[in-house]
Image 1 (cartoon, rainbow, N blue to C red):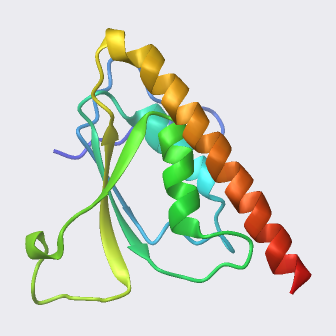
Image 2 (cartoon, rainbow, N blue to C red):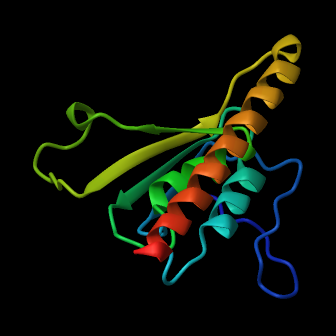
Length: 143
């Protein structure tokens, strides 16, 4: 069953508390030169409940400012979303593509006792990742 979300006056989809989305499908949307990654993560986060699964196709592309795959994963972690690559053995064997991955995005399942520890660990990882990205960007500029 496919369901179209209601739109606001400007044509933007509105999520209501009564809307439970089971699966979100996104194809060819991680293209930093054309589409910023953050709004995609924001939309997935807003539309995802605890049981929602998002499937994305990701074509590996070079982008000078950052690695799109790493940036998507970093932003996803900030929203309590985990990104897993669907193993090729689970995909249709007639449509292989070495440069395209299918990602499964879902909420981390944590209990309340682990939540504080999880938040601290994620903030530390993000801080380290940002420092690494800043260092790599500086080295790139020095070339």
